[in-house]
Length: 480
Image 1: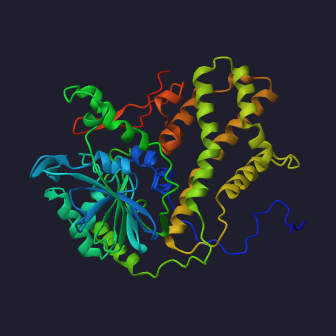
Image 2: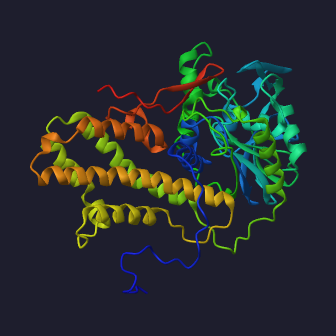
Image 3: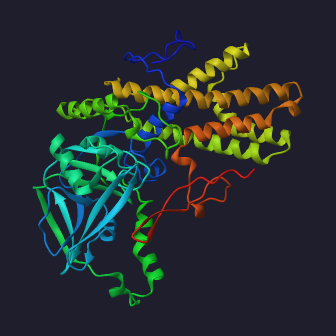
């Protein structure tokens, strides 16, 4: 019940908040995006270099898909998909023997992956798990892509490898399974897949022979361009698909990350996990062992949904930031800009500004504090150092944004009151907004080309897979 004695003081909590962690906006943004992007195709595509990992679990009854060469025998370890489109597009190639593909990983490292060549039928197996898998490692980023950027650094770290070795991907998976005694690894390439170390308890409920598209479409095999469009259509579609139907439980209390422990590049394409110091790499491997020894999280104990809190913040402030950036880039009439900005910021301002406080410095200071509390105070007590880290990152990000918004509101109010709007520095505000948007680098700032008429978003082809092009998300540079 509301107490009249509370006044404008900070909200009273039924539990004490643990101490925060000092961090700058750059590290806070990386942590913020890491939590948002976990098991999210779009976010993992935009921030592709895996840096962090968490424990995850799949319940019995989960559906998985796998393609094989005329057999239902499943290897250990083996690759499985959550969508049949992924299994279909990564199916074995018709022929005999094995096709070896070497992929230069940069800095002298080469990954070689082996694609089975089927002499007989290729089968698409659909199966249900018949036991819970509670010892899974979920890797962030586009962590199955064999590129020179560092996508697979997390797997090299887990296996104790370095950047000067030739690594067979299947051997790498086997080494990780043996070192950590886990059920498997969840990672993303075109979509999410799970490498299961030794799947024994499952039920195959569908087993079909796969045909080539050319065998069912009536098109000639020589019609390469048309066949590639058909082959990759579902790959492109799966990138926008909702994964809510997959019953993956993510344990954020087990977050293992190097962020805020040493400096990394802000650019998502330039930071690499294996740029960590040898001491930090050893520490992270030890932390994985430690996390796996912890008892499974008690589902009866209420836990904070940090992904939801971060998603709420992103949903709330993306329109503010992008709209203001557009206004400051396009508007030359300062009075017109002030009206548009006031309309945009109005409801947010009156929600937190207490008009009964006469001193403006105090009024705006309290508004910023109230807005930060409103968006960041968790529902339940914080239970781990990982939660302290996530909560601290969320507060840093929100405080930076609301300070920018209230500074803008106050500046406009002051200039309108003095009837001197022409002295308002529009260029400076535009620069500040652009710098903030670049630093935050949220997935919500990127959209496909077809659904955006704006000047800041575009979708261009991503990377090639055996000649086929997968979709990617890219932000077009502001031309103004």
